Amino acid sequence: METVWDLFRRRGYSRREFLSFVSVTASLLALPANLLMSFGRALELREKPVVIWLEFQDCAGCSESFIRSTSVMPSDVLLDFISLEYHETLMVPSGIYAEQAKEDAIKKYRGRYILIVEGALTPAEDGVYCTVGGKANHHLLREAIDGAKWIVAVGSCACWGGIPAAYPNPTGAVPISDLVEGKTVVHLPGCPPIGDVLVATLVHLIAFERLPELDSMGRPKVFYGQTIHDRCYRRSFYSAGKFASGLDDDGARKGYCLYKVGCKGPITRNACATIRWNGGLSFPIQSGHPCFGCSEPNFWDRGFIYKPLSAMPDGFGPKGMLGALAVGTLVGAGVAYMNKKQAKKGGK
Image (cartoon, rainbow, N blue to C red):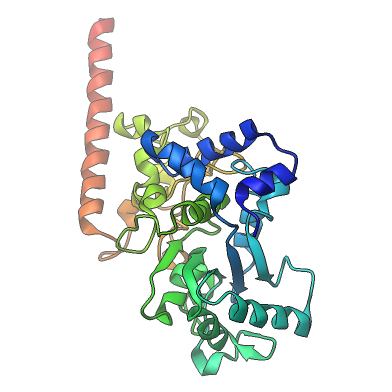
């Protein structure tokens, strides 16, 4: 089978361009310099992975994000660096032919394929709310789990239940991990997740043939190890106590911190502030809108997108974090007050 390097050559890319891809991906994965050579060598020798991609209760936004993640990999290589055996939105066959292709792939590549799941499961009432080819979604997932080498949940719907699980959750939507037993599920949450994160995770699996280091919630630490607040370019304004009070006030125009207009960056773990979107162009906070925490569980039921974290109901979220945020806000406000006072003294 074709390797990633073979694919680049077939598409007319030079060795230099391939090594550029290796370097960019290695930096995304935060690999140490001493692993760069072995990482590149592995991508020269490893075969393209077989991928079976299932969709359940979803909007296909995660798929859209993936096919637009061309800042890491050239667009004409992106959909070819994996052997995508089944994806109901992207594949050419439809109907019984598509389902037969999936069943054949599950048998042929048993123990070798990567199973990617997009969308929430609805096992309630025997899965009547989400069926594909006449089969309930949870039965389809069970058929694919056993033969999977790795399982990746893409997007907040697959990871936590997402929008379908929002109150009152009429379809009984649940995350896919509720039905997976005995295997680790890699969670890549977000609504949708950053496409480059999925690409880099797949490349890690290809090169090292093992899972990346995961946190307690199954998320790769390299992408979800820090909060957006930790790496936000507006963090200095937070520390200085300079906040926008509205989306169109003077503070917003000056680029001040969006904490008071509801930014959930302090409790949201994601790589938005570092990798960003659309080829590294921007992310919501940079465009002037507060983060509403789409990669965290239950973000859809909080009901206070434009209210600050201090307005969160008692018991929601880690109390220690909220206490630290409250102290940080007071300290920031105090620092700003003292700076103004010193400036007035200097003027006199």
